[in-house]
Image (cartoon, rainbow, N blue to C red; front, side):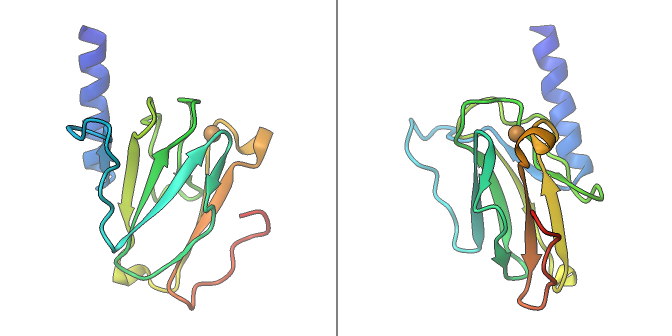
Length: 139
Ligand SMILES: [Cu+2]
């Protein structure tokens, strides 16, 4: 019980530090599908890849990575440390979100799963705006 509380407060701190929203997913929904706002793009995390892995989004869009697989060890981690979900995907429906601002228009972010990048090339990219450059091959 104590250990669980420490883990939860650590998660909350991580979310605050990265200015990201972390969610338990499905909360109060009684198993219904959560509503996804129009300015939000959902990337499904399955074992072991992201789908879609490399969307092009408009500035201001929130990207939500949602666990739809069974493996609780996935992460979404940006190559240069712009975001790192940590191990928050403990159950199906758990999600991590990040909003890409207008100041990031024209930028390309490459991200990966720390557990499965080497073994499964579990990685992808987010291109913000139509002028964002192509990611490296494989992203
Ligand atoms: Cu993974």
